[in-house]
Length: 186
Image (cartoon, rainbow, N blue to C red; front, side, top):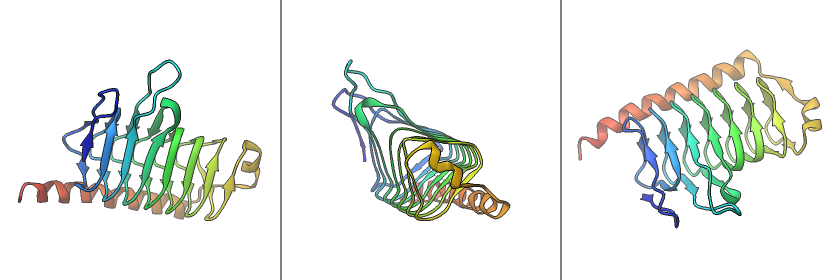
């Protein structure tokens, strides 16, 4: 479902993207080329800041927002998901937040008020808030990061994590093409 926010902003969705009919996109949302947005995802840009304006929620090219993901922002702050990134099932990305390129965010993870650098992997059921994760970090499952100082315990992403992230991104790009073909059958 594509909806206006109270300011009258409508999502802008590239024609090559696939948005599942059960997903809700509301307001100042920009969806790039070849993006997959799965069933029951909610991407909502509708809150304003103190001056009455808001920044967009941007989903970069070739990224995938999987089933049940919620992306929202506090007081009109910007949320940006980079290119070729995967936000896995039932994760929450709450702005202000920036996720870099070629990033994997695992099932049920929560990102809030943070930056996640390029080629990072945040595994399942993790929380990242109030910090800037540098490029190439691997945050293990069930890890809680609440400050930049917590990052000293985290290692760089290894080849197996990079391969896993690339495989997820490629699989979801194939889904975009498959679902776009199916749309033409109904």
